[in-house]
Length: 327
Image (tube, rainbow, N blue to C red):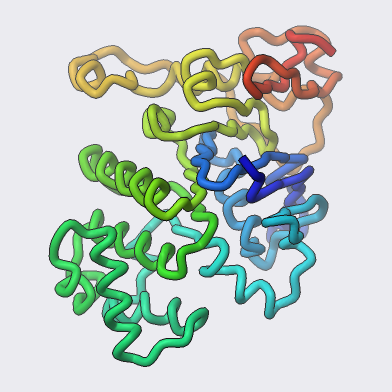
């Protein structure tokens, strides 16, 4: 498969109110093929949302992309001017944010909100836009597309609002859809429906998807590959089933052990207490030597305190950054 997206050595930092600087991403690299689903997995503070925002150059004002390349079809997003970015966002790359109730305008009807995307990138009359909006909504709603188009956000359920954001994101048939925790506020049944919708759109439209989550169970039988982030660094990456069921990095294994069973029935019947990863997340305002996971790692060695691990390659494109596999 031809590479659609190449992220090379991406570094992002933020300034705090006291003018101190801390890193959010440090040297993240990943490649995404056309039509591929990449899961990005990690606990809160690992850099997942910063990674998503960076792909569209939407890092907040107190943040800065300090190094790296983000190549979409060979063009570096970090070198684009304002006009090129306007054409990129919504047309070539679309972002679905975490909370649909905040992302949708409270006083605009759904048809008008989706129509704004079409008006920004395509030439349509008002009547044509309305017809196109209903057509888009029919692709994500089994029934009631016309009613949804005429509704306001507060008249819809959480699952319906999330489907509206997906419809808005695919309006111009982008090549890449970036979904930042899109099921975080939904119940398990609705989460499953949204995952099926993503897979359906990926198959029908050929859209590549970056699906960001803290819940590994959502990536089972869904993600083609998984990138695991910890403290702003990529610690493991590989085929979805390999990472989930044969993880090599101690952090990935610890994270998976803290998740409920992947099997829905087992999760419902289980009364066992889930373990937690001991210690606290790293302070990214402080420069540290060695492996960033070392203070919390049950397999740490003396050399982990002073030597930063490089990626070690396993089979089938599976990589992990851990010193126990070599220097």
